[in-house]
Image 1 (cartoon, rainbow over the protein chains, first blue to last red):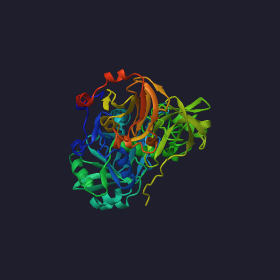
Image 2: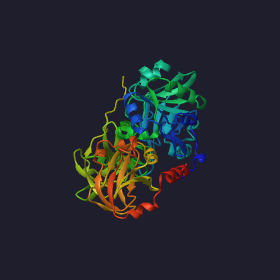
Image 3: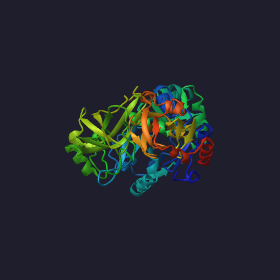
Image 4: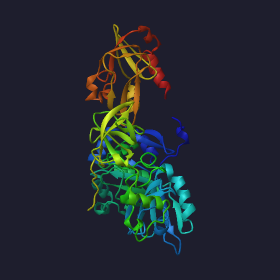
Amino acid sequence: LETCLSELKRTPLHALHQELGARLVPFAGYEMPVQYPTGILAEHAHTRTAAGLFDVSHMGQVRLTAKPGHDAAKALETLVPGDIAGLQPGQQRYTQFINESGGILDDLMVTSTGDHLLLVVNAACKDDDLAHLRKHLSAACEIEPMFSRGLMALQGPQASAALARLAPSVATMKFMTGAFVVIDGAECYVTRSGYTGGDGYEISTPADKAEAIAHKLLAQPEVKPIGLGARDSLRLEAGLCLYGHDIDTTTTPIEAVLLWSIGKERRAHGEREGGFPGADVIQKQIAEGAPRKRVGVLPEGKAIAREGAEIAIGGRVIGKVTSGGFAPTLGRAVAMGYVEKTHSANGTKVDLIVRGKPVPAEIVAMPFVKHAYYRG
Amino acid sequence: MSVKYSNEHEWIRVEGDVGTVGISPYAQEQLGDVVFVDVPQAGRKVTKGESVAVVESVKAASDIYSPAAGEVIEANAALAETPGDVNADPMGKGWFFKLRLSNPADLDGLMDEKAYAEFVKGLG
């Protein structure tokens, strides 16, 4: 291990992970469970068929509150292309912090509580994100990092039944909404969202109540603990981007096929057109298309093309894999990556270069496993 | 019949001039769930320490090095359908390939059961 475990930060659930026999690894400056004794395949299958509990407390939670005479949503819109001002209280949206060249500094979830905006950002980016927010939004907003709070994801088709036993109101929540919910006597903020492509929730808890709530959830018959290994295979099947791999400062939201996350209000001729960094680049790509595109790639056979594998046609490299692995639900390898736009149509035959050898593959639509969000 | 281990966690079980190669229980545990194994074709001549097979877990790909020189005489074709045998029975059904040894002296540099157990213990 490159980093000494003792230098790593711990989440409020660290002791629980040890108790459960997790294999702990360094991840984004934290000591995190990559898997529990049952292993990644069993954890993945359990999350797809029942309910899995993930510790995602390493992610950054930030609260924005408008200063008198200011509007927090409009302030945040100066940094992201999403329609934030249009969020109704209790609504959640996915968006990205963008740099001047249209690249993605981080991707994040934003929920309006009415009085505040709650942000969840990636663990590896959270210090930079906080500095970015303070630099640009301090005049308009109080910016409160809540990095010590607990954050758990409860995911899977039985997540709702399990969580509703502790907090009945969550059963009727719809995908991409949030609400304050009392769980085990503690005030939590729950959103119906996640990173698996399935139904589920993310539960923000006070730090000192995280472990008790995790125990309560694990006591439900449907629920088992799931590590970061299965979190990665689940999100890959769902075709969801992993920051630092599938998206980063060199990729724009248009190249990444995240146009859906840019509200029409923020596009050319919209009510609140542009006004975010890199808007000129992004508006131009919306109008004219981007030179490359994020696509799904399905290899024939069983060889796995990992991140960095080249994508070629007739020996000419047309792109690169940014995430690739085994999709347990499908029992086969899948990949996503960027290819030149002219070769990005579904059905295009390509080769994935795995250990120097071409593996026949095809460009396919994502997700690889159908999303199963609860829309009421 | 003796089993010897490399410091890359391969084992080789020798009967006559044929060695059967696999990975140790420690190695399979470190890898986690194995989902694909790329085994060498029969007839391939390999040198000691040469990368001859690849084992893919959900998380990563790892090279398997031949602990001795020789010619591959058989690969474990069953692993294509049941790669999980590497986890469930690493010293038995999870074998990778059989090798006709060309230089039995290669085995001298390998660890016996006891030395390997000490070696693994030292890895913490």
